[in-house]
Image 1 (cartoon, rainbow, N blue to C red):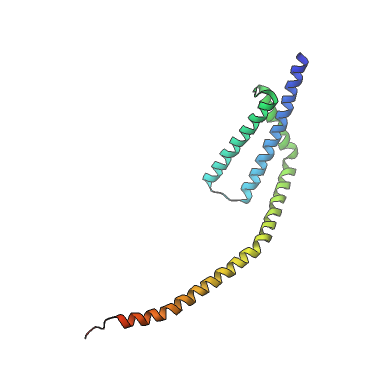
Image 2: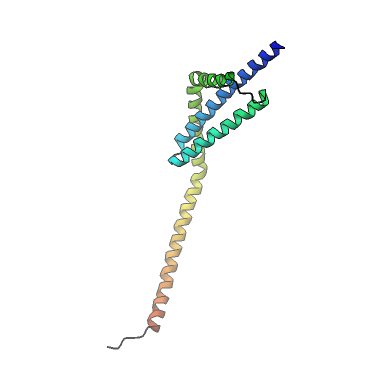
Length: 155
């Protein structure tokens, strides 16, 4: 009976260590995202709050399924240990990988959106030209009509 209890607690410790690594990876991904997309301070605060809220929900959901959400000291120790493990062993490698992925996605986005931006600029220039021509053409008859219906001042 006691062996099963200890094995269960070790399983929960292992789960929380992996959960700590997962949270650290998500935090690193968020940091890279924040580097590439400049946001205002209120949006950063909202993003940080949502990150904490989502991570908390994930932790409690996994704890619920692994040990009926019993929160003990080894749960916090496992989360902390997982974060330290990630920071000292995987942080640089994962950060470089995330930055390279973001740069690649940025290049793909620019490659795909480049023709659309070019075409949109040409269409906008064509519409501006058409508006100028219409304004010029409609201004002449309007000026003639205006002069016909204006009363002439007596001198």
